[in-house]
Length: 211
Ligand SMILES: Nc1nc2c(ncn2[C@@H]2O[C@H](COP(=O)(O)OP(=O)(O)OP(=O)(O)O)[C@@H](O)[C@H]2O)c(=O)[nH]1
Ligand SMILES: [Mg+2]
Image 1 (cartoon, protein in one colour):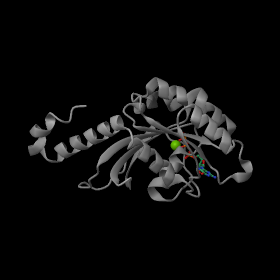
Image 2: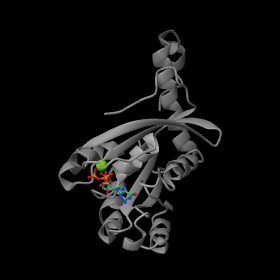
Image 3: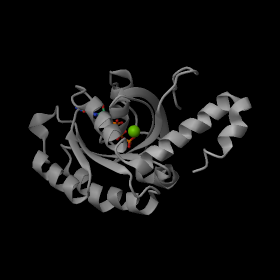
Image 4: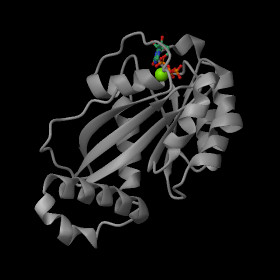
């Protein structure tokens, strides 16, 4: 289920962001931590879920629709279509479980190649659960090396302590704002929204809003 701010809220750009990675790495927790500043113990996601968050970065008002996909294999067939039109993708691994890091290359980067429709889409690799310092199995240097190899941004964070959680989404959004082709899509979505609110203006908008 999605939540959204009340109608009448305005923004400069609307972006679609996707969270992917193995089951249990903390995708839903990161999203909850970002949206509501607290984390509960969550059950595995079934299929897909999304939340809407408004924020201002780089002087622009953004509406982020953040899609939280299930990591469990049995739900994967449902989630491939959610890559479509995403301007940003967050690849999450658990710094205490090495296999979740290996699967970024073996599974998740491949899924992006298969399903992502935006060539210019911005990606960020996020190592979550850094609060579990003594159990850490993947070093920051390894994370950075992987991210560089795949042309992604990189951050380590904790959904639990909220360390770097906002930064993950803000850095991704800032980078999207630097890419003209992604901005164009973001603003087209805004135009459609405005024309929905003001039907009388629709005719004059039609020529300009086709993507
Ligand atoms: N210590 C610690 N635990 C975390 C952190 N983030 C998530 N967890 C825990 O890890 C477990 C899995 O978190 P989820 O957010 O459900 O993981 P998910 O990636 O959404 O999993 P799927 O929905 O199955 O794909 C939960 O018990 C969380 O409380 C973190 O930063 N630190
Ligand atoms: Mg989940």
